[in-house]
Image (tube, rainbow, N blue to C red; front, side, top):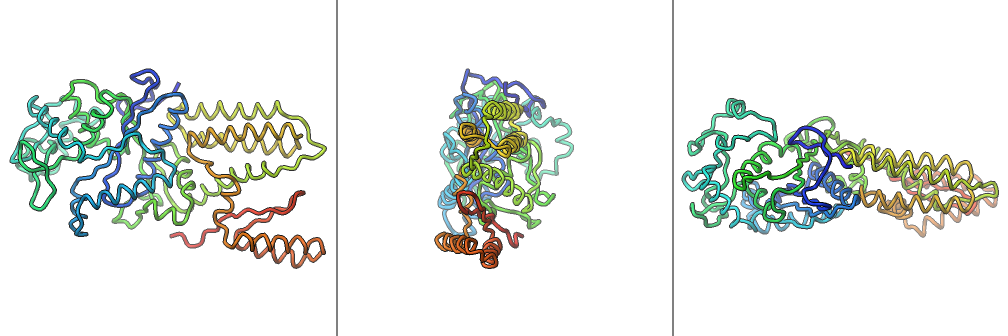
Length: 481
């Protein structure tokens, strides 16, 4: 049984979807005015893995992730760059999709844009006005927070405390400083849509209420996003949707933790802001994905280039295991150890599922992979026969398939992984290896060592085996900051 930490209740709960074997899931997407940063990468990987694991467990998953394609940041940037706001958003939707593909994120089933649902947003405003939960003020429409008695139930915030802590609000149109905009009157030279209240555009919070309910219906099973969205965004979504529909909005609320950069909060003003593009210029995207899985999704994760190197080294260990397995040399001393092989695999599978069932604990899930590698390497070092080797390969491929399906890693062959960063032409490398082989046969060890040292300085490791010499490229990082 899968257990999920539900932000709404503040505890882990057994996961029971509203419909048998079907999970409807909505995750707040990005505002498309710039390249995606590491925070976007974390949220995307977290909910991709949750979705993948639910599919692995046999559920049909309907996954929705939206684009906010109209807001102040979009308008400001389009004005600054003197391009139409639609041209700007279309560009960054494509850039977002490229980054997600690089990180091996499965495409959502639905990717709605806010501007595709303007009529539905206007309709929701009208319903809330009619029910007394919203009011019109000079072309703006505001949500009347005081009328929704459960406001604050997700973020565990008290209305009186929120009001006492509210800054002085210079917007005299509001009845209450806590009231938030459902519809905004457009300023001069801003994009607008016609509405019963004049020319305007939607507020931020209303878009997700509309898109989720129109595509999934409410209630739906899982609503997700970063912890920064709990208040006010998700709190406001609940207020809007539950006031209008008079029923529960979403059953489970899942929120991922923040990304810190070298133990400080990521911020453009601090100069410690990294985009996905910044990272994948220096590291394979699989390294970034692996790193983001090394911490439980609800905990903060501390990003640094040293931690990326650690993640890369860990991935190297996995690929080295599969590489060595492909080149394992069976000797006459090899013994049949098939029973032990099956026990090691069974231990991995039960431990992996236990970790993932417990609120999608990817950190423990990764640990089970390395336990498997350690146990199998011990067995291989004791020498195994051909039948046992065949069984190890079959079960290791099964492990790889499961990890690939659920965690989205181990997606390359060992040869591809270790040749990705080849610092010289492969034919030239093979020629040098052949020269070294000839030198060793001729007992010209000085020349052989010079060739090995030269290649090692380039990050190329040579492995002498009974079947000949092969190579692996272990990427070297220079200046990273």
